[in-house]
Image 1 (cartoon, rainbow, N blue to C red):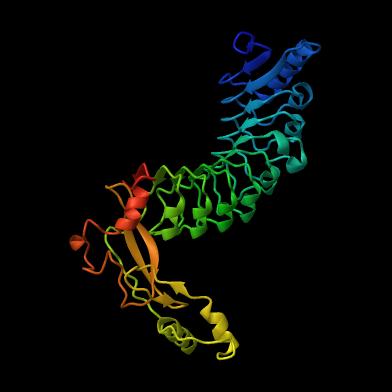
Image 2 (tube, rainbow, N blue to C red; image 1 turned 60 degrees about the vertical axis):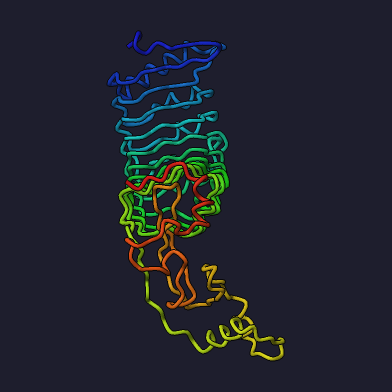
Length: 371
C-alpha cells in the first residue's frame, strides 16, 4: 500500500494515486489521517487524489479536514450511494469525477452544495453511470460549472433551470430516457458540445438555433423524423450526429390542413390583394391579427399564412453528400417549394434542390453523421 500509494510530487504540487487497490473506506480513512499528519506544516499541498475502482461506500471524514487545497478528486467505479458533507470542505475543488457508482437516491449529494464554496470553484462534474432519475436541483446552482456529465443514468427530463449554468461549455446527457429538449437550453451562451444521444427525443426546439457557440450536436439513436429549419443558423456547428433516427429517406408532405377561419380569410385577402386601410376601417381583432402574418418561405410564392399552414419536410444538402430533413411551413396545400414542384417522388428530385440553403450550409458543416 505504501509503495502503490506513494505521492508523486513536482514543482510544489502532488498527486496521490490509489487506483484499483481494493481500498475500503476504513482503510482509506486511516491512511488519509496519517498523510494529513505527515503534511502538517509542509509547504507541499495535495492537489489530486485518485481513488477509482476501489471498494469505497462513503467518503472518508479525513477528506474534509486535511486537504483544503485539493483540486481534483476521482472516486469513480466504487460503491458510493452518497457524497457526504466532507465534500463541502474542499473549497478549491475544480474537478469531481464520480461516475459508475450507486448515486441517485435521496441525499446522494450533500445539503447546501449550491451555497458552498464549490458553487464558485467546481468546473468539471462527472456523474455518469449512476442512478439519477432527475437532475439534482443543487447542481443547478453550481455557477462555475463548465462540464456536466450525467450520461447513462435514468433521467426522464431536462429541467428548465439548466439555463442557470451560464458557464457551461459541455453538457453530456446521453443514454437516458429524455423525451423533450427544453427551449431554455438555448440560453447557455458558452455551450460548445451538446450530447443528447441514446434518448427518446422526438423533436428539436427551434430555439436551439440560438446556441451560436455550439460546435458539436449529438442526437443519434433518438426518435427524430425531422429537424427545424432554424438549425441552419448554427453557424459554428462542425459535427451533427443523427444516425439511428427514423429520419425520412424521401420527401414527405403533411397535407393535414384545417380550413381557415373567417378572420384568417379576411386577413389573408387584405394581405394578398394589398388592400389599403386605416386603423378606423377595420375591427380591432382583425387589426391585431394582421400583424401576426408570416411570409411563405417559398420565394416563388410571395404568399402569407397565419394559423393555418402546411408542414413539409424539405431536404437540405449540407455537404454535397448527406441530405438533411428540415421542417418548414407553406401557406397552403397548393403552394409547393422549389425543391418539390417538379415531383413528389424522391427518385425525380433535381440535384439543385434547395440551392440557396445548400450553398450556405455546405461550408458550415464538416460532419453530418446519418449512418
